[in-house]
Length: 63
Ligand SMILES: [Zn+2]
Image 1: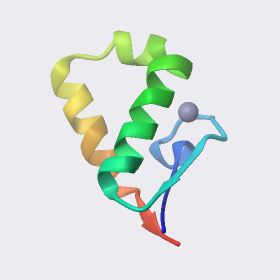
Image 2 (image 1 turned 90 degrees about the vertical axis):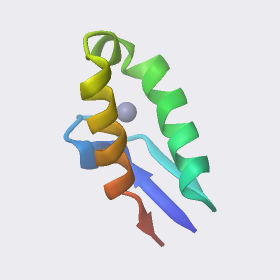
Image 3 (image 1 turned 30 degrees about the vertical axis):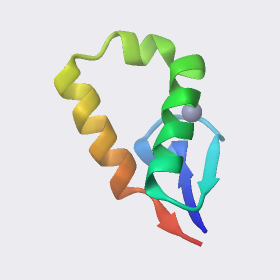
């Protein structure tokens, strides 16, 4: 199983996404961010969002 913790990207948040594939994790993480971190996302440029997606991917761990 794969796991992603929101706090690994430097955000003070206890959200953890789990799933079988990277795509599944990314989907869950962005759905979460769109609700809980909407303010951060809205203040980001497309370039910063692309960086965030990379950071997210780099922080997905096998558990
Ligand atoms: Zn979060």
